[in-house]
Image (cartoon, rainbow, N blue to C red; front, side, top):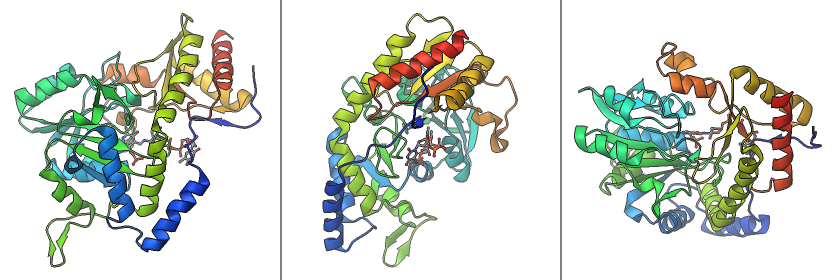
Length: 368
Ligand code: T4K
């Protein structure tokens, strides 16, 4: 097995050219404006609208994805209601619901997309259901049509957690343009980042002013505070990082596609290893093993013997964590996947040769 000299982490952030960043800092210094809707943020907002092909009035930037979700849920009026969501996600999805006073109801996932199943979700809809929050997990697209049907039939809001899905398109449209609202995370572990950051894209442009207010303490004017807002503003350094990374998006995406292809072909037809290749933007490289024991063996031997640090996203399942304990067997598909999945390293700069060696190590461990 190949042991790498330097640790290979599950992901590394792309870092733009330092001189370009310094030049941007000179602009920020000249403006003497660091946060609170500054010029760099406005520029980033405009460029993102162009990149995504959505209206500038249908977007709002935040200082991270979690607060973007919280503010979005608050603006959508989810407080006090039930919200059907997936247990197969990062804790932030449900934390944001709980923190605005909504009650997450967990429904099982589809075994192919690993996203919330609209059919299972439909069975849990009651008069208390205010919204459904599916997650495009790993950049796999949810069943958009299925959720659109539920939106029309029951009048529930559909708010996608698209934290993993920046850069993904369906039929030439950004994945963020479906449903009532979508949230992209710009954390450095994502394929695109702004150090930290989050973006809401929403159907109803009338929401924008409310979202802008809520992210700034709900201060509406010098003499009016109209709600219980928070501080969720993106600052100028974040916006600068985002602007520089956005220029690189085509290459960031192409690189992931290349790494994904290495893993996909290395694992093709291999008994006991299923490479999950549904991700549109190749944000993550998840592999499914035959059982829990094999996954755990691969996970620990890669770390100890190969200096490779994959992650068990998303294990333990959200519904196993203290604030959400739900009872075993409630979401059997999600429980099964969480116990067998491992996400392998992928990031801009990881060589195809290294990805191939990692895949070789995985196969050897599974065989042994
Ligand atoms: N919804 C979903 C579905 C999400 O997955 C997330 C976040 C959110 C909502 C919330 O969005 P944000 O509020 O984060 O914008 C990471 C991230 O912190 C988190 O953003 C992400 N999902 C989650 C899936 O993964 P950890 O605890 O795994 O991060 P950490 O620090 O262990 O880093 C992972 C790897 O990346 C390590 O091997 C080190 C490497 N790394 C990390 C950072 C931050 C670097 O090389 N450089 C870096 O700067 O949570």
